Length: 277
Length: 155
Image 1 (spheres, chains in turn blue, cyan):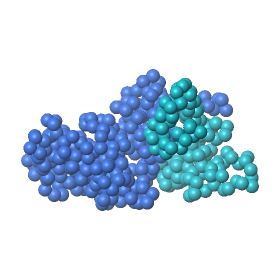
Image 2: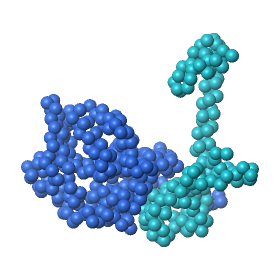
Image 3: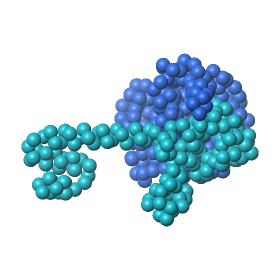
Image 4: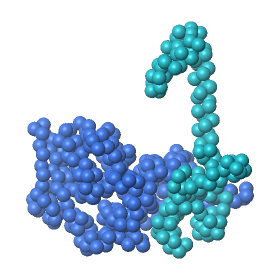
């Protein structure tokens, strides 16, 4: 038995120095996701690995040395008979480039507050997600598969798919169980997203932005349907430009209790996209 | 008896009630074994669907193993150990002889230590009125009725 235990330790010990993008933040994010999904022992293992990451190396880093999903072609989640395949459409990767217009589903909404802040937001069609090689597209197809074949609870999420999508650091998880959208709160904040704010979405210091995100989160909760937006904003003098996918997850009673919010930061300020339309 | 785990089978046979997942939730040991399976699978970068395909199972069945909702049979555990390149004992690592998770034991130890520190600090307050005030503050902070502990103290 002792030899067996030794073998286990050898086979699962972190093999390389931590070079994972995000390093310990990566493992801590995984730990939080596992905890929220109800896998406390797995969460503890990730947290322990994160604590020892610098000294003993990071097993997540070893995996990263292999071609990641971002580097190789991202295939559709294996053997999930995704309804997404009916949604997915071959769109060239340049569809999200700066020179081509984006097939917005409706006219853009722009809100100003008279203090130099603005939020410009457009809902996007899911057809506009690239067929392959895109983290949001992969995540959306994975969610569609889960939604079709499971209760679509956070417990059903397989973190290996999140890793393959290369989206771990760009994920927020929002507790949306309250009927009052002002009470929605972040349970996980994407460490790679350059917004340092950890309060409730509804209490964001720039009111127009707080109202905008709470409205979108609440829409996802009420409709139990994913939302896809392109957002361009200037908040307290800083410009942001990103595409945001909001995916609802359900409790045991079939109500939306959590939202997984995935962000893809876009290059530039989006002005060329705006003139393209 | 509210909780009856597999590890408590050696208790009073007459009072033993068969545990069900629906009523009692997954058995803690099954849950732990499922967690170990999930961790190892993730370490190898294998999705539930991929591992399931190698076992001839659906990804939903793998999910149920991992949550402890479905118990893994001995033959399946043997297969899993081979596929995941770990010894059988790997799935039980972190459990003590009574089938409890070791970190839960550590947490229990910690709370015992904390309780003893609180008691030590409490009884080092010599003035009974100050002690009663402290008790009242703690009772209010914890949300329990302040009357009961004070009455107990004055008694």
